[in-house]
Amino acid sequence: MPEAATANRLLSLDVIRGVAVMGILVANLPAFGLPEAAYFSPLAWGGTAPADLFAWFVTFVLIEGKLRGLFSFLFGASILLVTDAAQRHGNSAAATHYRRMTTLFLIGCAHLYLVWLGDILAHYALVGAIAFLFAGLSVRWLIATALLLLTYATISSALGAVILSDSAAQDSPHAVAIWNSFAIGFGVPPRADMLAQISAMRGSWADAVAWRWHHAADPLTVLPVLAPETLSAMLLGMAGYRSSFLTGAWPRARYRRWATLCLGVALPAYALLGMVTMRHGFAMPWVYLNAMVLAEPLRTLGFVGYAALLMLALRPGGSLTTRIAAIGRTAFSNYLGTSLLMVVVFNGCALFGALSRAQLYLLAPPVWGLMLLWSEPWCDRFHHGPLEWLWRSAARGEWQSMRRISG
Image 1: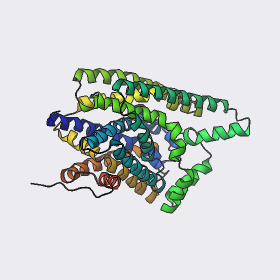
Image 2: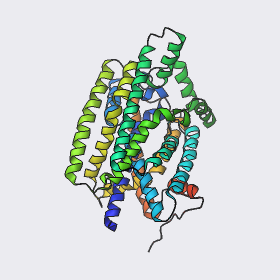
Image 3: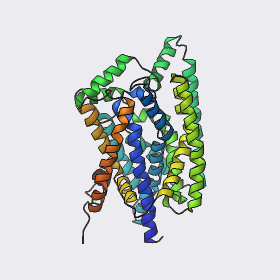
């Protein structure tokens, strides 16, 4: 592979990863600033004014699940990128990968309990450990396995919808318990519970840690529930890398067809699901059905379509492309750095639960500006982002080279 082609293909991965990190910030803002249940249901907290409902609808259609899926997609591709490089240098691909996943799991657990409830890193580490077992499959089998996993995830979510529907009458203590357990994520939990979370998040750091310790979902416990969809996206990412979809080698017309087909189906269907949810007044069974069951396959179409669209938009050498690629190269630092910044804003400044949903999204542009401002100058001077360097050093058991040699 020519050196210039290699550089361009790595650039494509960095740009898509950079856009994913910027989009994940938007997806996560309700989770940073509002009680847990408000992520899916505006009725829980954050307001139901027209601006708030419009903000919910736009992010549901364009962002929810699709940017996280895009990040999982890239994570799968990165597994092959790292393990292929390890093999080229005569190192064990398995040893390299599992050291990285072990270190990532520890960092993710620290992030989950010490910083923010919505950590995804520990989950990625566990699923990434499984994904490596499929790395030797052909592109065709990677896609087939991913689609089987997606089907399983959709059926499992549908069974959850049946269980929720059966408990709607709340005519027994068991039914009440099931209904209330769903309400934590998709409905309106008791107000006292949400006020307790708000009080803890506005209190001291120790108060917030204690609340997360008792309420955060254990990564091992939720693994069987979340892993099929995440693993599906990672395997598709492996297929995207092996097939050169993610490295820029396809003709532009082919990317255009994929973007048109995937987004032409996913976004209108998402809009319909959003309107149906609003039409039913965000009743919990409809929130769950539309967000977790019917949207399941649409999320996959959405992130594949976004990836194809970004391949079309890629402009090697362009100023914006270069800056977004730098965000992608420092994605780990930007992801964790955003969490720390949001903790300062919402916990340190006692704004948790104080802003409306629409107001939350006003924070995205300035945070994007910070990402664009620091990432490129840092990459010009250093080989790795600060937390990428820490992760690599911890995984390899020795301090890695950091500063670029000039001149």
